[in-house]
Length: 88
Image 1 (cartoon, rainbow, N blue to C red):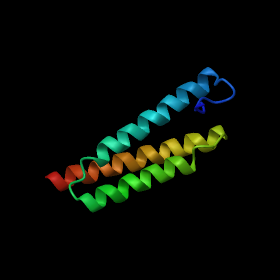
Image 2 (cartoon, rainbow, N blue to C red):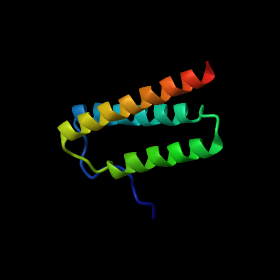
Image 3 (tube, helix red, strand yellow):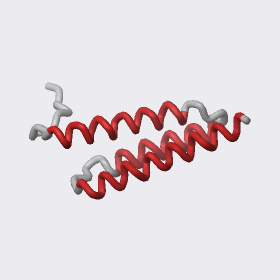
Image 4 (cartoon, rainbow, N blue to C red):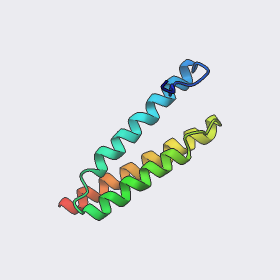
């Protein structure tokens, strides 16, 4: 018998949209990390991103979640700027 990964309670619309936003941010971060030229750096960043998202998976405080989304967006933009500088 397989265990369902679905939550025991349904998400309301706001929670659903926020979850989609977080998942999109996670995917964007992993896509950007794939562009890092050095394999060791790429592995370090991938492991860091996965650990951060896993560590905050159970967060329920909406203000804290919004703050984490903002921080993740800032990290993503910083990584993108660093990659653009490295290419130029």
